[in-house]
Picture 1 (cartoon, rainbow, N blue to C red):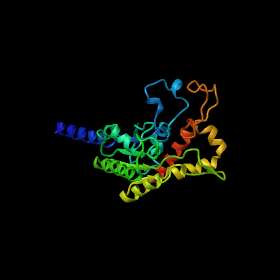
Picture 2 (picture 1 turned 120 degrees about the horizontal axis):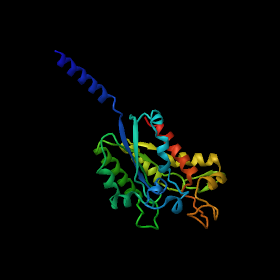
Picture 3 (picture 1 turned 60 degrees about the vertical axis):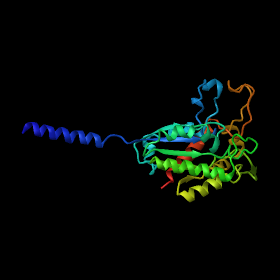
Picture 4 (picture 1 turned 90 degrees about the vertical axis):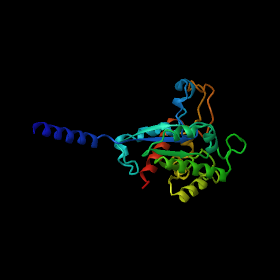
Length: 258
């Protein structure tokens, strides 16, 4: 009788422990240079790349357990963020290089996949990157459908704005019809969507052209950073403050998904 009671108590205890194990999922990031993690490029980041930073590189700090409670679609205790974005990639080149296969083969039920492409898809002068609008939509459909086949959740994010064109102190869209094409796919397939093109344009406009040019984008004076001794003029890629600002916009966008 005593042995039975002990067995019953152990069974209840083990069940209690199992029920209280933390729920952990993986968040995969796939996209281009504005999202990538330059610290994982296999080189000395501080001497070769810094201060260049992708917004995906800054995102994990906004997805700590306490912050996850504010995002209803992430019904988990913690997220492992795996940043597979890479500079110069479009929806097509990311697929052709096997980068999507690498993610797909590791996807598990309950995972999430954030997809941001468009910067390079629109580059007609660079045929290794360029994807027509119909082709762009087809690749997005492929990513969405195959993510769902694995029991994971896709999240589409339209391209973050470049620091142009400015008109009457307001930042416009440099990505043509690609953000709209992504929005159409999101509506067609009923996919979570964050309209980062418009959201970032509004935020950069609020901060002002002069401020974001110097503090957000990679416009660097000579002699300040080891990696850029001659300085740099770059209105596409971000310094840490810009990456942090965009990551916060994405975090707030995630909060708004229901």
